[in-house]
Image (cartoon, rainbow, N blue to C red; front, side, top):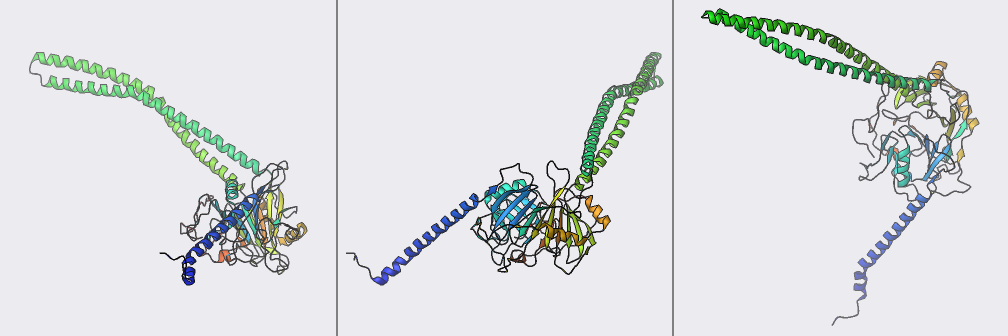
Length: 502
């Protein structure tokens, strides 16, 4: 008979696995519920502007304090969503970046092949925007996680080179007007459009010339058929004539000789007839040969003109691409990049060079219905004045303590007035400026992340940079600032290794 009583010691030992399993299951259910709740909150906190027509995105600002990303077009914010930035020790670095690569389906080669959908790279060392889980606080290894649906939506509307600002606090752009801000030379867009029209016209003419040459070639080929036939017939008649002459010389009787002479007479007449026909056919063919030669020469000239017009159109189009200007108080230099290529570097004069200048991003805007280009400015604010560290808040929490720090236009204007750009350099840059161009003025120097296949990368030295300092750095690449060649598209890292380090 089996006893219904259990020894207490055995009871405690035998029930422990069941107790642990139940506890673990409860923890998993609780974690799943919390994760689901966090994910649901994240999706509900995604917002988009609906009161106006949305334009092309020109800038995204990630607020580390509010754990939020806001995307702007020329008229204001258009998309907004919560994020999860780098956790303590792996903090997302505050600074100025641009999108340098896009990959819809990306897997980390550093963090266990982790899925990072709709990845938009900010540095070649591995900082990026991508879809991911949002637990409601900074939790990544340095990247900026966004809600999955929002990451896909943002991926579809952004372009390579779009400015991304990672700010310690919650900042927003404001309009600014100042004579030091570059204004494009009038007619630049019209000139580019004219070059494009000329390229299209040259391409059409080249196509037409090629068709004319092909038609002339077909006519020559068709006219050559009877000429070849006559040449073959003449060769056969000449062979018959030669045979008749041989027969006459070797004839053994008068009758045979008479027959050979008759054959010779017929062959001679046939050769003369064919020679006349061949001469007439060749005379008729010659103009067609001349026309073909002229058509081929014209086609070659048209193709050369097409290539030259296309190159002129490409240069004019490149001239309309946004240009980035960076002025560093630390190095006392001005740098210019366009289409990820360095094109200019000169020393610059800054009044009161020992006084801090801050970090300011001026962006050129083109607003519909307004012919003049306008500018906005974002000024980055450092550590929280009370605690000395950025105040990280859960996504969506909004109260009186969390307000956007609007840039002070007078302060930004004072920064512009401290900069003295040589007149010829100012005119050169003004000739390149177009909408979405930018002027960055900062106390900082260029980050070592700036290199081949990047825009300017500026990191705020007073902010945590664990997320980028832990990554294996690429070999530093020497950068020469000189007139650029053709624009290079970097769909992958331009460095020696084909894989990025995450």
